[in-house]
Length: 166
Image (cartoon, rainbow, N blue to C red; front, side, top):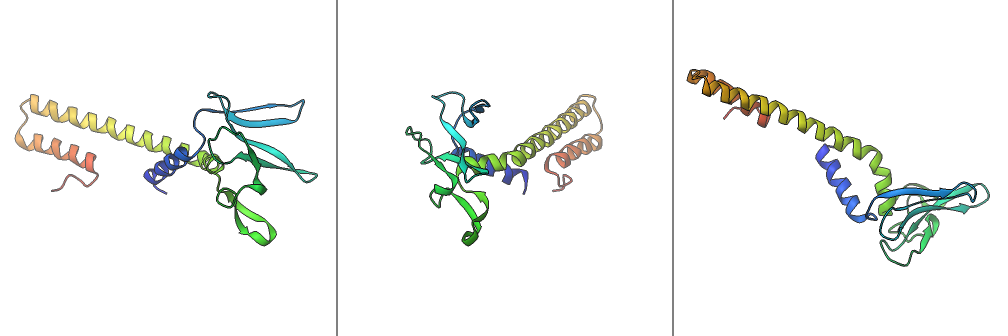
């Protein structure tokens, strides 16, 4: 996935997910943990519910961003928000279609990729700034046209990544 595709995916997921800053809350004494918004009336994003005798399942608000605060366990979410089944007959799934679950799953890899893309662009901008300064210095020093054209071509090569031809 290219950085542009990753950025587009994160922004699409972000637009669908519960808005705002998120924080985990809970109480170890009461065996309670949940993820919710920090501001705006503490909208629940995710919590966990007992699932049998030894497991827990995430619980999400559905429909999204409503004031009802109704949370549904993973197993009871509608098909458009529930598990993305690999084999529905035996209950195995890979992924959860709920926008908040998808954002959580993508964030771990998407955010670093976006940060790397930003760093790459920042480094490219620094390089272009240095190249532009070299062109200005060559011009101001009265360099021969060939040297000035060479500096401009080098800047164009750095800018468009095609060597500055054309």
